[in-house]
Amino acid sequence: MGGSKVLVIGGGGREHALCLGLFQSTAVSKIYCSPGNAGTAIIASNVDLKNNANLAVIDFCHREAIDLVVVGPEAPLCASLADELAKAGIPCFGPVGILANLEGSKLHAKQVMHKVGVPTADFVVLNADSDIAAALKSYSNNPWVIKRDVLAGGKGVVVTTDYTEASNFIESAIASDGKVLLEQFLPGEEASMLVVMDGSGYVCLPSSQDHKRAYDGDMGPNTGGMGAYCPAPIVTESVFKRVDEQIINPMFDYLSSLETPYRGVLYVGLMITDDGSPNVVEFNVRFGDPECQITLPLIKTDLFQVLMHAATDRIAELNVEFYNAHALTVVLASEGYPSKPVKGKKITGLDISIPNIDVGCKWINFAGVESQGKAMISSGGRVLSCSAMAISLQDAANMAYELISEISLEGSHYRRDIGDKGL
Ligand code: AMP
Ligand code: GLY
Image (cartoon, rainbow, N blue to C red; front, side, top):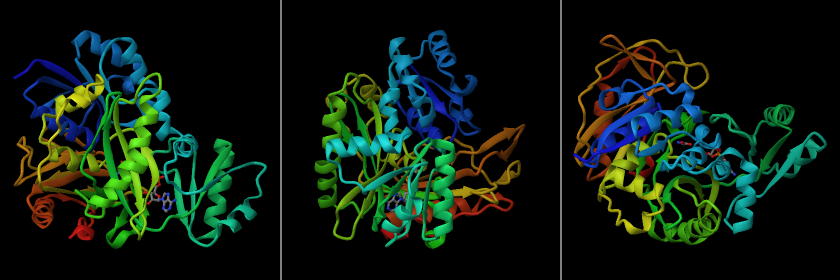
């Protein structure tokens, strides 16, 4: 076993996936996770660093001689955690604050896409002086797409054909943020491209597809993501080529020309129109959740090496290899999720042994789970996800669904159609 110590920031399913990947690395001797969850506690030491405030994290890194910090969620990145770690000389997987703005501000992301020539939907910015009725009229052929310009924890976008809902959302966003974006609706199928990038180059991880609506058939309210699979067949070789040429390569050229290059993962949320044209619906500056849970296992190369190389501008030196396999995960959500999740319920049937993730394996990614003595208790909207990796997508789906059928949580729900679009 190697001697590197890693601190993972965050406490959801994504961070459990990162810890599981790092746990399998021969270069890692110790993993800390702040704040972590009941799953990370099995393979890492959970620590509570005051909501991951910059100073508390830096202090901890010095005290424990941390070699690499891996930041899961966007909020600490937008709060310039990577900037402070760079000043302290500690490698960080995750971009500096000004670049995290690609996720923190939809308007900034649009301005960058415009400058770089990346295909995306047209938009207008509305403020207190705007004629909202006229703007809605001019975008009225399709559902209205309205986006707040702040980090809103997944609640910042409304896609609706209901005039009253659209205009109320616009008015309340302007009242709280001063402005809001009204965007052209793009019809098509969504996919996620996670790109590990630094100043030396970039590596595209296999594409994936999330399921954002709460219920089967893409019905019901938007959620953080109810399940995902990887790779996504919608991203054919020719679509990938266009994504690379029209989006990722120009973004890399732009980001690597800046004073501090982008070091981390750039999440490219794509809408692929019927003719195979890729458009960007969003950038995130972190791994997707639950996309992370099924993308990392397909990386054959040691995960620590991938993350450490990107944190230190050496990704171009690494030959990153992938399994020729499929992975799929199904999220188990609490009763009432996403609007009013019921928490504090006992979960039974959980396998808490440490998985050796490989082709043919199924495992649980813990998210909103805390342990109370020997009991496992739900503590979030998305509680856990059941994942599997197999040679075929159908086998991965069968295994993940078999695993989730063994788990009981009163009132919980999950989608039965994860992966159907790929099958
Ligand atoms: P965002 O946070 O920007 O990814 O938006 C959340 C969700 O809204 C996306 O995953 C899409 O399902 C949908 N969406 C966002 N922008 C558009 C658009 N221009 N056209 C159609 N759907 C969109
Ligand atoms: N699964 C969507 C996201 O992480 O933003």
